[in-house]
Image 1 (tube, rainbow, N blue to C red):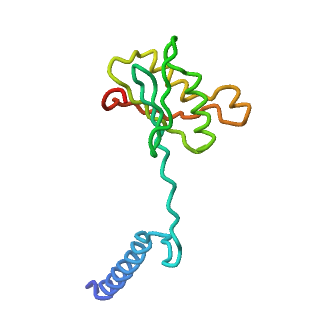
Image 2 (cartoon, rainbow, N blue to C red; image 1 turned 30 degrees about the horizontal axis):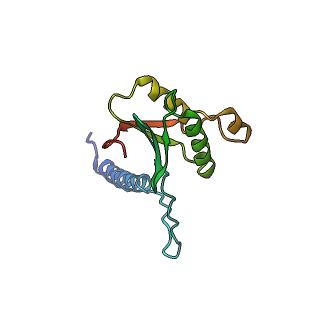
Image 3 (tube, rainbow, N blue to C red; image 1 turned 135 degrees about the vertical axis):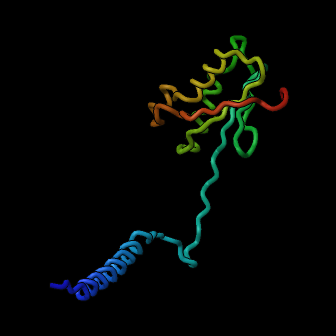
Length: 153
């Protein structure tokens, strides 16, 4: 008795061809990336640049600035930094840019750590009067630290 494998080879040839075709179709479906590209007639709206609010802690006071330049210089009081004026200024800034939540603190050398924490808390937390007017509990919760360039202006 002899085994006829010709018909079995024909079945395997068809099976291999079927598997190759179906795997290439499946691979093509997996590699498709769904992109929503803007059309040429669609105008791009430029995003509003960030505020880049910066508070520079100097020995003689605070400099508050944004990307357009200096907003204000706050001189020290006999008790130290003028936290009340800083808080009022930051409330005004928050009202004009409600989506902004980042502030950068730049320090001159030898600024006491306690002063840094007080300024940071003043920038982060909204005063009770401003919260009553509808501002969120935190004004600028994202705080970055850095070294102040140069000396006093």
